[in-house]
Length: 77
Image 1: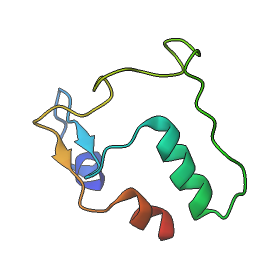
Image 2: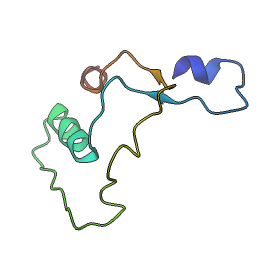
Image 3: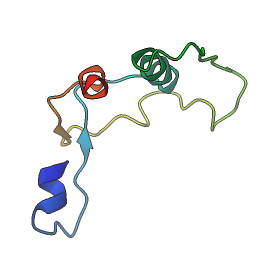
């Protein structure tokens, strides 16, 4: 991300993603656990299109630059 931020203007889009893929509810669980937060994440299957996005809509395209740091490692820092 830093290389993109300080690099030459792309005049386009650079997709940057982490090396792991998580559903949003699982990302919330991982985040709360890392912060020793006792709250739980409840997934509402009836929440509609803003509560859950089916398929791989939020997954970076094949040409994305993949970070080497995992989300859990990043949180631990």
